[in-house]
Image 1 (cartoon, rainbow, N blue to C red):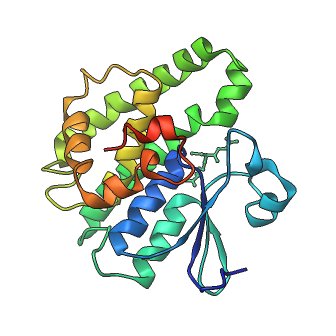
Image 2: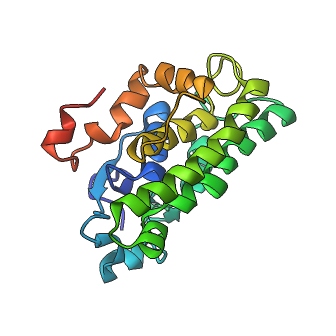
Length: 223
Ligand SMILES: N[C@@H](CCC(=O)N[C@@H](CS)C(=O)NCC(=O)O)C(=O)O
């Protein structure tokens, strides 16, 4: 089910942080793709049609030029790294690669899943205050560990002065932190790295407020 022009397809949603990671990676690698919106707001992710693409009902899903469907943001990014090794997202050296993976997994496995939409709905229903309290608690706890971890690894970016996959996971996670009103004052390093990354064209173009399915009133706040 590759697109007619044989571009890869990214099924995603502007506000989804897992989608945002992959959009940054695609921009970083200079890979053109077809943007297909899957609205988490209206529940398109649970439609029969989309469940045939991603049986987990989550975004993103990536369809390669020859029609292979890939899910899980990190797996998609690993694939992109392998097919296009120029502008690597993983550093050289076993220790550095493990450090990047540790940041990626702290975000992808420990922090992000706890404030995913399906989890928030389950623990707090439509109660925005309860959702905020829950998400805020877990992000704050995760960022406390992450800030300390970054003290050991960071330079300009998460790992020294080279942009890696860790940075591509960090920026979308900070976006969620803002959304759930996390006080960022205790996290100066995370804040500094995030602000630097947000000035770069690949991170700007991938930003939620620069996506075609972003409502116009939010687009005004695009970086
Ligand atoms: N581990 C997955 C997470 C995917 C994920 O949780 N996506 C969210 C949006 S950021 C989603 O589709 N949520 C739908 C739901 O929770 O129902 C990945 O990295 O791709």
